[in-house]
Length: 167
Image 1: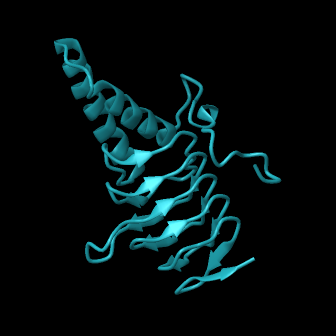
Image 2: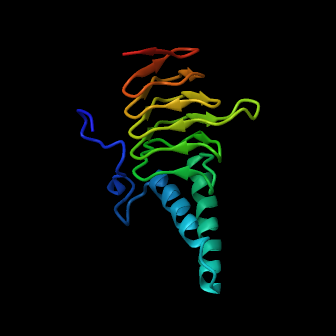
């Protein structure tokens, strides 16, 4: 843990939970993805039907949020997406526990040469692009509109276009 008290290893599932009657599209989108990932393992007809309903929920919340987060992506628990508009995540990328993604973030590949891996408790500012086979260390910070093409060590920050590492 760092000064913020947020773990880079243990997911805080409370960050993804919501009040059942509230309008919270980002958490509803994450809930539909988590539901699909749980249900796709089932072999019963009921599990199959519930899986199809989870896909329907996912499509509705994808349209409502404007986010492109694939159903089969690997996202550890505790992800926060305060403003999900325009977020794009490559299906093979990995996002560690307790990360924070703001609007218009892209996490993707460059010419099929690998995908990003985000550690735990990584904060990614609005409009940032993390591209290629890069590793973002635990407790790292990515500045708004940064274009990250290099590895970011744990606890460091990356800012600018192209991104440079700062303390």
